[in-house]
Length: 249
Image (cartoon, rainbow, N blue to C red; front, side, top):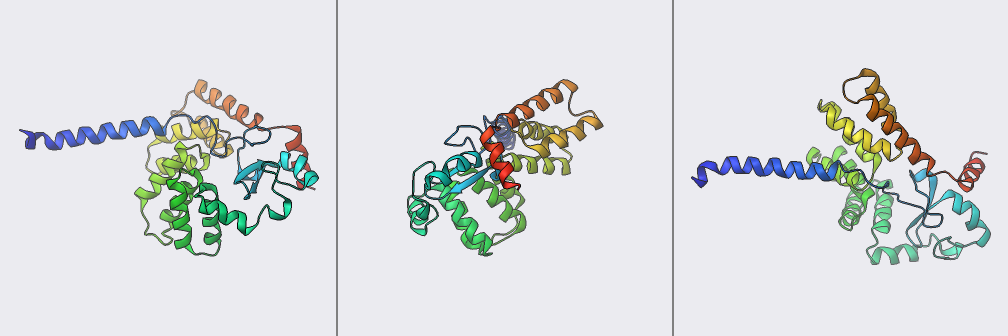
């Protein structure tokens, strides 16, 4: 009897496992994986809004950098002297401590040199320590087959892990994959979550979906549009605007 019903139970277990995974995957994150600037505590939406300080593995918004860094000649967070902010010694110290940020950034250096084996090793270790961006970077290696064999299942796994951690671009690519596979309801769910995090491409895609009709209601689209604008507005400050204006000169 157990042998006769085994396939049925296995299918039920797989279906339940997929349901539990989706519950986690489609949960709205509180913020992007960039989180908040550690100085002004305002949200960060993308890498262009901030500067990397390898001395303490922090992303600090350009507004706070503009307001403090060049005046005090120190890291705004850990007060490391400007001469040591990007030093190899500090970087290796962070790597020795298994700092996931430092591991990921070292992996990027190998990636730039097209040493994909080194990039894979550092990004894998960073991902094991919970670095969200490392998961997204690993998905790229599996998609392109760089050092590792092309593997759609592993690519998807790492994209999902990144999306769960609040990576809006990873979630956007998941939406694109679902559209390719004609799973439009899942694609719209991904786009809504990414748009609510302030991701511009996702809200633009949702606008197209809304114009076509059938997959998102007027009320749901309006609510998402408001949430997107609120997420964008939350990142604004006079210091950041001043820094952006000086960068564009």
